[in-house]
Each structure stands twice: as structure tokens, then as C-alpha cells.
Length: 66
Figure 1 (cartoon, helix red, strand yellow):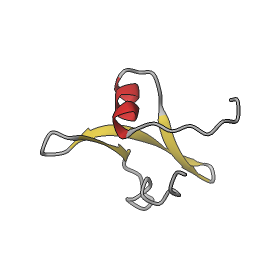
Figure 2 (cartoon, rainbow, N blue to C red; figure 1 turned 90 degrees about the vertical axis):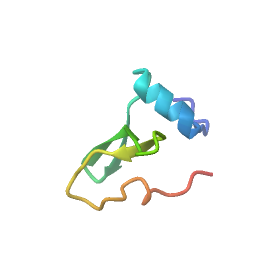
Figure 3 (cartoon, rainbow, N blue to C red; figure 1 turned 135 degrees about the vertical axis):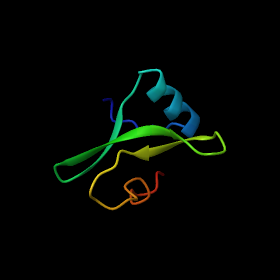
Figure 4 (spheres, rainbow, N blue to C red; figure 1 turned 90 degrees about the horizontal axis):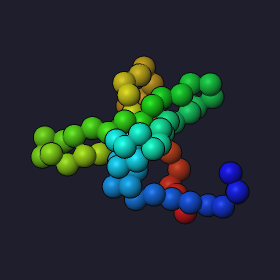
């Protein structure tokens, strides 16, 4: 809201989602897709988007943070 650039680590984002502090989504045009926490077979948590009919790489297609 103050216009400053900010960022979170992956672990901070995961904790914020799981704790109910934040909700994240990707948006292309008017189409929004939720970002959720998933767990790999190894037990490591990661972020992914909910299933949709768009490309399977919604997060990977975002521009790099600077």
C-alpha cells in the first residue's frame, strides 16, 4: 500500500498461507488462480497454483522478482 517493493522467502510465504495470514494468486486478464501449498513425495513443501485449464506453469511464467 505504501508503494515500497517487498519480497518474501519461500518459507515465509508457505507459513503465511498455512497460518491464514496471506492469500496469493496469479492473474492474467480477468482470470485469477489461487496459489496453494503442496507437499512433494520427499515431504518438502512448495507453492503451486490450483488446477485450471491454462498452462500448467502459472508461477513459472511470472517475471523474475528484482
